[in-house]
Structure formats: structure tokens, C-alpha cells
Length: 235
Ligand code: APR
Image (cartoon, rainbow, N blue to C red; front, side, top):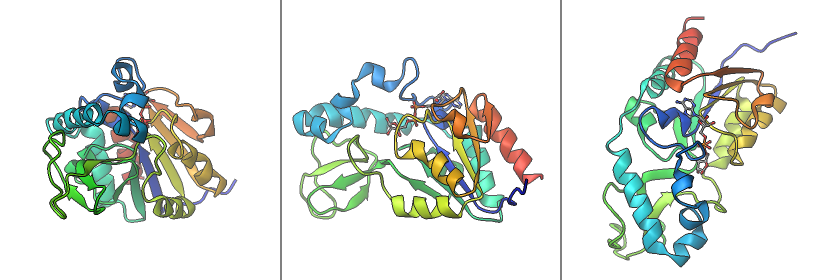
């Protein structure tokens, strides 16, 4: 069988890549949704119903991520980003900034970012490290209409055109630390595969879409991701 040489790589990351940095995943035992029902904190309806609860929840998360550090998996992906001569795009579902802090630059946040505030009055995004609960004014227009720039359930993920184009052109699709429970990200493996890419899963355990991958490697991200990057760069 002819196997295309690998030039363009798309890497999808999820909460599992940040787990060893001490950031809760969403669906594992003790995960975030166990303490809060999704509908109470991560939907536009929840924000309309109880903005204080939602803002406080995201204020806590925003504060927490600023105390965390990138781990060996983030570092390995940043090294791959620096050294891989072909096309590469990291599409992350994570709203933390640990990929960037590790040094990745070819990265896109499809579910938004904790460290941005979005003004629903003027549509500007502003870098934000403080809290939003006291309804601070938007730095651009002065209105008190800021919300976390995080994609909630029922909202459209960001930059889907760029992601689709990258999936179309990739020879290898790699999914790291995601349960495969949330679409459209969970469908990327099939899109890439249908278009001829090889597909690899690196996760602690089989994800929901595990059967769609040509290859799966199971273990903590700090081990399996570092091992895979080493292998790829030394081929
Ligand atoms: N190394 C690798 N994988 C891990 C590790 C680890 N140390 N720890 C946990 N995992 C795996 C889990 O086994 C699980 O399959 O990471 C996955 C995390 O899955 P989820 O908690 O469902 O997170 P994710 O897939 O990123 O969620 C997708 O759902 O709630 C929304 O918008 C939110 O972006 C999020 C989206």
C-alpha cells in the first residue's frame, strides 16, 4: 500500500494535554463538570439567567491557569513547531495559554481563550488577566459588557474555515488528550481520514472515536507526546 510521506501535520489537543499541569479535565472523575452542571456555567442561556455565577466560575478558572506551568507535552509540541520543516497547525480546544507559554506559535484556539475578554457591545477582544465579576468597562468602548471569550455549548467554534483547510491539506492528523465527546472537533479525525491523511491518537485511554485512528498510543501525555515527537524528528 502506498503511504504518503508526511509533510503537513494537524494536531488537535484537548484537556488531557494540560492535565499534568494541574488543570482539571472536563469529563474524567473529579472533573470540572462534576462540580458544576454544564448548563449552569457553559451556555449562553446560563449567562443570561445567572451572569454572576458564570462570571465567578470563569474568574476562578482564569486565576487558576495563571498559576500553572506548561508540562513536558506542551514543551515537546513547541519543539516540534520550531523544528518541523513542513506545515504544522496545533488546533487546541483548550482555553488555557500553556501551548503559547511553552513556545508554540502555529496555534489556533477553536474554543476561545481564558485570557481574553470579549465586549458584546463593540465586539473588541482585549487581553484580560483580572476578574470580570465587577463588570469592568471595555478598554475600547467603555461599556460594561465584557464576557469571557470562551465558546459555550450551542455557540459556533472559532476559525472553522482555517481548520477545514488545514485538515484538507494534512498528511497526518494527531489527536492528543481529548475524549472525542464534543463536536465538531470530535469529527476532525474522520474528515482528515476521508481526505487521505494518516491518523494517530495519543491519549490516556481510548477516546470515543478511537476506532477511527490508524494508530493509538495510550499513556500520560508527558510520556507519549514526548516519545512521539522525538521519534518524528529523528526519522
Ligand atoms: N495525558 C493524556 N490524556 C489524558 C491525561 C493525560 N495526563 N489525563 C486525562 N487524559 C484524557 C482523558 O482520558 C480524556 O480522554 O484526556 C481526555 C480529556 O477529555 P475531556 O475532559 O472530555 O476534555 P476535552 O476532550 O478537551 O473536552 C472537549 O468539551 O466541555 C468542552 O469546551 C470544552 O474544550 C472542551 C471540550
